Amino acid sequence: MATKNRPLSPHLQVWRWGPAMLVSILHRVTGDGMALVGLGVLIYWLASLAGGPAAYEAFSAHAAAWYGKVVLVGLTWAFFNHMASGVRHFVLDIGAGFELKSNAAWSVFTPLFALAATVVTWAAILLK
Image (cartoon, rainbow, N blue to C red; front, side, top):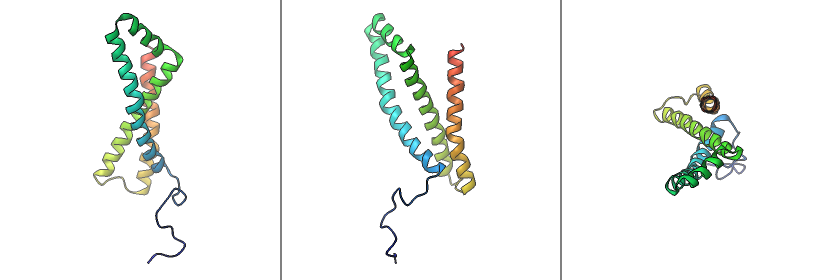
């Protein structure tokens, strides 16, 4: 039987923020971001390929500009973060990693891996 002070359903004021909650939210945000922004970039790239050399030159100019690099680096980070979080969810789905310490460690490792993989990827691209 529920007490009078207990809420009927959990909400954000009840939960304590932790790394697992942040990683779960980032997983959803990066998936949506890749679907929306990544699809827009892909369509623009394909349309510029079909549009001829002048259209592709315009796309390349946008991609090489500072704002284009910010979008591409952001998509790269979103990809690696979503991938690492997906691996984390896979491990949880097979029944492992539910202990508090290992879950917190995985939750901290996920965005750190994404950041490191993004830096390594873009260092390889830019230092080529």
